[in-house]
Image 1 (cartoon, rainbow, N blue to C red):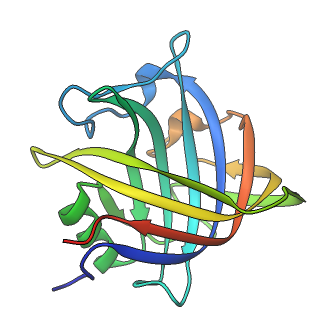
Image 2: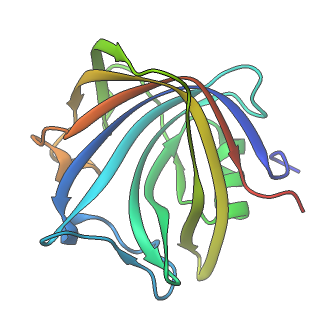
Length: 193
């Protein structure tokens, strides 16, 4: 097997910013049949995250992703319409196990996709936990999975550098509504067979 079996147990850190964008600009080709983006007055809210998975994870790699809330089979779920990783094993596993459209990328200065600078940091008390379903469509296959994440949250300021001609160009020039850093992050993705 080229990648670990599910579930994947991960640990690391993340920077997450939430943007309000017109619903029509969010890529929707990876929504499963019947699912639709949740919107308000023609806008939807997308989270853009840069994640580092550290030693202690089933795989170690960096990831840049876009996530959006959807209504799927009468429940709220999350879809990932765009995502890049610097690990072939993560790319293959994400695509084959959960229908997540992972592509390979290199991160760092001069990235043609996005870069982020983080300043400040107001710690919020306690630990935070989030869990719920994901809903994806890839290669003609609808796939639903479960994710659970926990960690400590800091409110931060972010400066995103997104080339206008790149795949995230619809976010160029937009200011995040809120940005957080997630420290001591634990993530479990997928179910045991």
